[in-house]
Image (cartoon, rainbow, N blue to C red; front, side, top):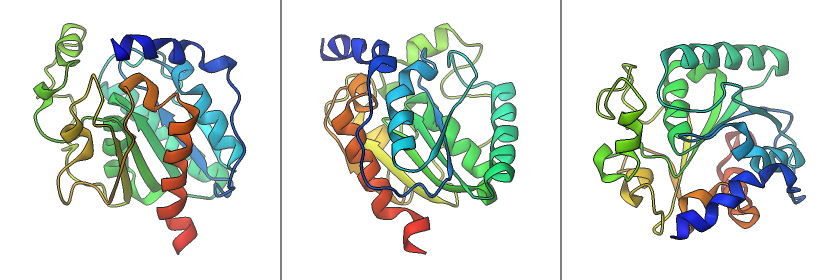
Length: 221
């Protein structure tokens, strides 16, 4: 029920304005990848807030995210290379839910171009069947959640700074799956909110960006 009540936040994202705050983007591109059955509309407020903080935010521009897709991964690899060339700086990858799995795979493939990976309620760890969306995922894809069409192990930590955002009240993804085990991520942040709220609530986004600024390699190097 809580998840259903949170859905309007996703649909109303384009109408919402971001808050100003600490500038730490330094002109870096931030590629934001949406979750299952959503597209760039769902990450509008997050990207607008990133722009307010000095980033160059980018949607994934791949339509609705229906599942792991080798062609979309290749297209995103090319986008990352182009953004690195355009800005002269490493990229920040952010992925919400399924988008976080894309982000971790891309960070393993393109580590030299990536500054930081932030997963928001993303099931990168543990039992894929511990999450409520696995039946829907398999119904709309030609592969199972245990056999995605890429070789990378999403539970293996990419060789870049990683932050895993998780919620103990997530109604879609099991908390332990998006928190990760020891060694699977560098940093974690608990934000107790429904799955569809954690990436669309202004207060949740503020907490995510504060954590990013705290551990940002561009700030600490």
